[in-house]
Length: 165
Image (cartoon, rainbow, N blue to C red; front, side, top):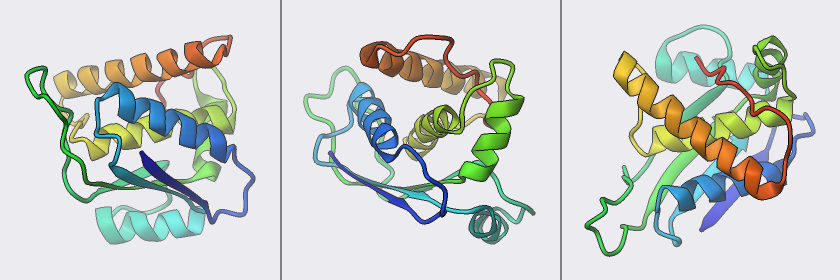
């Protein structure tokens, strides 16, 4: 799995954890090990620009996903998942800090960025949360992936509650 993490935000973030949880999420979703992903961490101004340009919405957001090859998790009948370019995930630590502090289970910026990374991966794989049934499926899968990764890493304490809008 080729995953690049590029921090352009000026904020110190746990890049290794972002890399690790992205790799875990992609493996859990059975994405081909030769697939490629890019994660970019930007400041609030850059995220606000992207948010207006691509979503026509003002202000910075927490995470944006830009799919490339529209890869999907393989079905149980598939022998081998397809490989390709997954796309880009853009994260904003300033928004993550605020969301983590306001979450029902308060957590750190880095924990929120880990949650947002999984959220971005799921969006790249075609998951969405516009409809209640889609939201239940996506957020349930997101929680299972984050919980599985945290357990594998031996991390204790409550997992971050979904704060993604």
